[in-house]
Length: 353
Image (cartoon, rainbow, N blue to C red):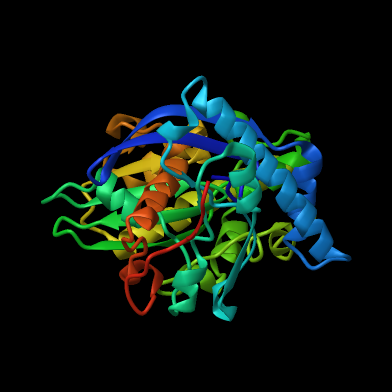
């Protein structure tokens, strides 16, 4: 998995017993700075973007293959039945019925000698869905508990919420920015890729008027099914709300509260009966963000998915292993109640070893 935070590739090996998985190996590969910058540029229209996208897809695929070799770590390649590869999203426009993930799965199959499952979003989009989020089906299989309503919040570049109902019903949607604006603003003003532990945000003071202005964006009040991405929530979007005389650390503190408030509003609207909230994604290692979410969601207990058996960094990658398994078994991987698709669909295309 490589998500909207553009930090790199997260890889796992998952052993499945029935529909529930156990992570037995993990590996992360950082994106080179040049690739990260190119991917940010490719999220917007630009010169010669078709060739640049193809070359970026080659580089990403080689990084995926390197990550897979490290994951194997002496294990025979045959131990892996299939590799689920999400690719790097550079355009997600469900209203126009497309979502583009840069990847060359045939190259990965050639480099590793393993079967590759990719292109998970297009079938759901073709069936009238958003093509996202796809992880709620995995969350239900892995974290669902009969008789208890749970909320799972993925704090990636874009944050998304999964509601695991006490009666087995599942709902999921993107709540808005997770880390994408926090990271971009931090990079611009400190030179650091992310605000470690949320320390810089904690040094500032949220600006109520700016927060209100940001939350007036129609996306936050739109009903699900809905999904979004860097195409909508980006630095240009933020700058349109700024006067220009704000202290950078106060903007950072306000952006942290934007993530907190948009998640809080989503939980209040979608699952006011949630008995507990579990966090995953890179933002779950941001101590200031987690503490602010705990304060916003009190008295509900807020914990990390580590306590459910999968570290917060690896939940998304494990979800695509789960989806790849569903594809190889000919089983549906989407949830129409989540994406809005016309019905259950087998997702992904298989590139044989």
